[in-house]
Length: 284
Ligand code: SF4
Image (cartoon, rainbow, N blue to C red; front, side):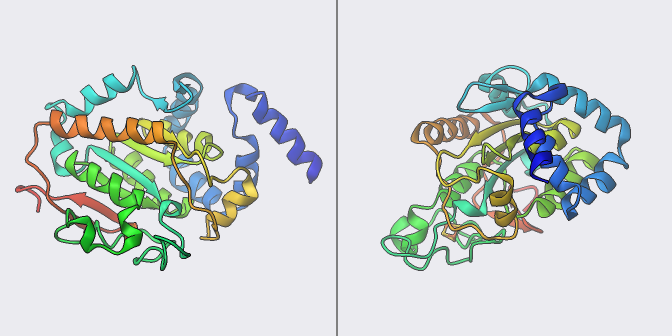
């Protein structure tokens, strides 16, 4: 087994046939997510899967801070998002901002104290779920004041984007990938991810033809498959963090989307399953 893993890692290192996901695919083949991928994506959409595999080799570009799965740079991403011609963008169906449960504070000392009031390994946020999520900070629990889920969730709300708190790969498959591939819901996404899992994550988004930006964690991230698979069931004792540069860059991008889009303002989210979808006068 160790020899097989060593070979697969070497194939990943060399990006054999253009794919750095040999080890991930091998392990996933024996797990629920692998079966889900084969059954719900590859077998249901064989031609799109082939096109996605081809696209995967072509489209990934990386400037070291943000990995782009789209034509052009962040400026093009911004223009695309703000374009009035994308009809459902104002209904919360255009842009998705996907954060991870591991960005929530851990129970402990200092400002985190009790950790996330909504619990950690779930799709919930007690602040984003409020009818008045822009509540003054001093009225919130200490944990929430410094929480990136709140900060990026509110920036996403201003930008008219839906928010999803990622947990397991299987949940992401059902909540995001199936609607994307079946109905082309969420044509653009901003994903906060571990650099380790990013290559595997990008493949189904290529199949769904999503334009996406991937922002890697700078600390607390999973570095190998065994850490990833423990986090996949909620066993994650680190809190993932972004670099301050990446944080500012994504915040600035969301602020520019908020001012550049031509949609009625959204003041709170409504729940649609695990998603937080911004409400507007027409949908909420
Ligand atoms: S803001 Fe963060 S800590 Fe507070 S409820 Fe939301 S996810 Fe939990």
